[in-house]
Image 1 (cartoon, helix red, strand yellow):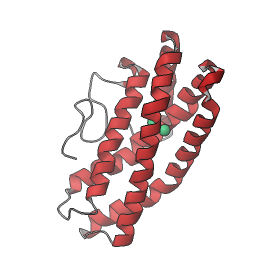
Image 2: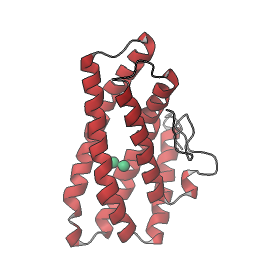
Image 3: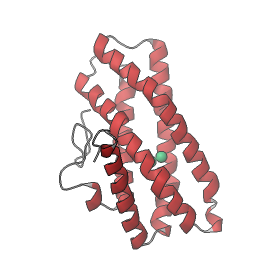
Image 4: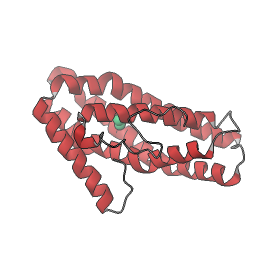
Length: 190
Ligand SMILES: [Fe+2]
Ligand SMILES: [Fe+2]
């Protein structure tokens, strides 16, 4: 990946001094979204660029294995329940959150196959088949739709409805999710 956010390291972890606990949790989620957009662009380039760098593919795989699952747990277990509590009836939040939770379920289901394709591309050093390209691009198209919806609707609503103490509680919840991922033997995405 040639143009990473300055707040992230090439291995997909956050830069030192920018740990989750130092950051507004909504800014942290937005940063994850920007990073995911870069990963999607890299995956799309696989379909057209035979000179794709292995390092870029490995960065994308690290994101899909470590940071994306943590990001979705932060939303499912912390942000979405808090939004359900804090939203006003006119926000019509339930329909939106149900859609996003279904998206997360689909992403969780589809990501292992995408990781397998990326591993095969690195191992074979061959251009992916047209079928593989179609699968990769379907995955990134769905990811982008999800990101657009969260950036346009969910994060602005959260910034409007959540009080500073809610954000502090979110930060603590994110830290617990991170620690649980490490305790469970998962990778360090912080
Ligand atoms: Fe998100
Ligand atoms: Fe999400």
